[in-house]
Length: 282
Ligand SMILES: NC(=O)c1ccc[n+]([C@@H]2O[C@H](COP(=O)([O-])OP(=O)(O)OC[C@H]3O[C@@H](n4cnc5c(N)ncnc54)[C@H](OP(=O)(O)O)[C@@H]3O)[C@@H](O)[C@H]2O)c1
Image 1 (cartoon, helix red, strand yellow):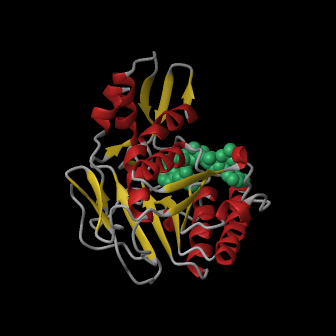
Image 2 (cartoon, protein in one colour):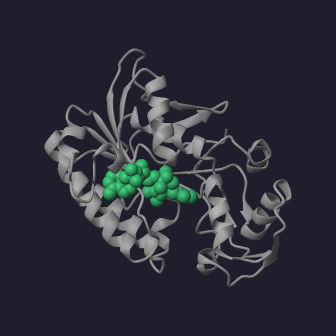
């Protein structure tokens, strides 16, 4: 569906290869030949996106290893990294910070410095990172500043890389609603979002990781745009829990974001899953 031909360029890095969805299935022009198994280390491979990426790569016949603190690998301290990266063709970074505040800057800066150094030592040939659409246009938000720093460290390093910038996950909407819930009321701004299913993000990451490094960034987004207050109403209409949505353009983290900063540009890849269908299936 709807994949544009060009890639959004990340701070002047040249575009290389890309992927698209064909009839809802991810496709990569540079995809490895069938039977050409590769070894992937998925840092954050036990998380929402990471676990699905590991599953998709394994289902395609690849050797995909999940690495996180629960498997003995810590990207902050470096514990277990050397062993986790040993023999890896591709490293995929799907970690997340425990907080969205200023501490996230330290998390993403320190962990990405540690990981890029380990990738260089291990001779990794492709480093894939999941980031956020519009991330470098919101320096006033700690978490977005943190993710921009993470992108910059990766782009400045020696390992060939691809940065996939996704919009907000469908699975994140509940959390967004919880931030501004007060008794039976959810206050939400009209900020426009273009949410995407985590499964579609995982498809995009797995397909990107089996291709040639882009040396740049590319946006992926869901097929539909919603003002956040409308997204809240659709969510609560599908699964009523007694709360109602009140429009409030000063409520929550996304209230600070004007215009279409969080929605994808014309050249973004559009994923196939519609929120209205997904929410009904929950
Ligand atoms: N939420 C959204 O709408 C959205 C949109 C666009 C992009 N993103 C990006 O997507 C990425 C993945 O998000 P997610 O929701 O899949 O995250 P998640 O479910 O919270 O998973 C985070 C993973 O990181 C691991 N981890 C955390 N600290 C670690 C450490 N010090 N060392 C090693 N592993 C560590 C966790 O496992 P352990 O706890 O076992 O260590 C877990 O596997 C994030 O970077 C986020 O910025 C999110």
